[in-house]
Length: 117
Image (cartoon, rainbow, N blue to C red; front, side):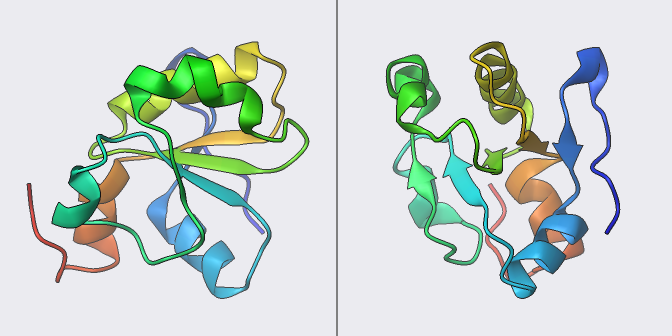
């Protein structure tokens, strides 16, 4: 298995292809959608038991995430989830990744049927 890429300022990233492969293989991981709740209705990743924690509520709810479990955070383009990933790392999480390019990359590389927004 490949190692996730490292983003600017050492925030770990996972590509959409790597995430799709891990999901297909049933790897245990927690997906966290940090977009606004209504964005799920526009476009989303396949159901993998995602947690929905909008970025505005993220600091209050970050403690509900298991620091020993692998977590992949995503948003529309990867900016909000990069911020949230950084916060998890600051809280002591060692297996937290930002989904590189977010939903837009998933649409481009995995599922072009998703609605663009």
